[in-house]
Image (cartoon, rainbow, N blue to C red; front, side, top):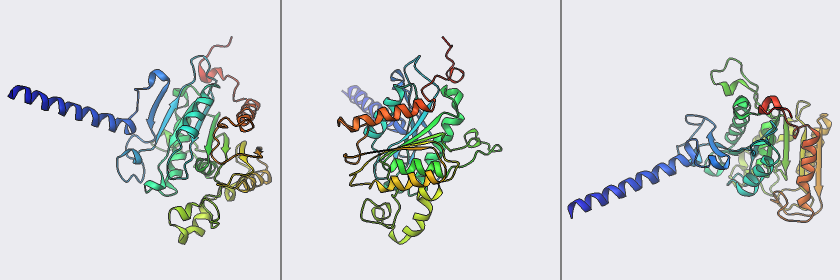
Length: 320
């Protein structure tokens, strides 16, 4: 009886240890459990991330990698930044679905799980994560079989604000840095924005507002000057694609048109598509007869920039 009791305790302890390992490795270590699906998760920093407040999943920024089907890769890559109002990550609608769409077209796709203000990580911490993600993908281009100059940043809603910030406020590579990731630039080569919350940080509280949501109105004028992408547009910006809907009640389309105008005045190649009807958060269209067309416009734009053409040197594929 005593022996059975001891065995029971050992089984319970083993189960608890296994459960603890599963929980901890799900976010804080490189994941290989989904390797057979062509999916893995990697950390942005091997140790604690800068300004980390703890070691939970909320404190560990990661990239989840989607690999295209063998033989279909083209050498292009995309870092995807989901939205969620900086409160959460819309990982399905604006993460997994987007990554699968790009992977089906030969891209190596990376979904960024950036740290959130709702977990105590106010701007610029999410920006640190976005810059690091772009640098990491570029620094490990040969390992990922991609071309380091075919890197797209794609952001939706709040993720669009973050992607635009990362693009307008990049860090240059430091050739003397000890970390190889810090040796390369964080500016993407192309930018894709879906209904981006570009006016997130603003004194205008008539719509969704970062300062109001996180009780920062007393600092909002200063924050607006720091984190409004349109104020930092220069001629060095990469070619950009923007999608929005005219009657978006959450993020007014004017936020995108102001950004478009700033880019056009700076001489940056920019293409914008405004659909007449559609609520905020439409993802790839969500089955709407009209909105389902916008990904085909994006595909044409990608093809026009040569991003669907196979780079044999990057992918290692032999020319037919």
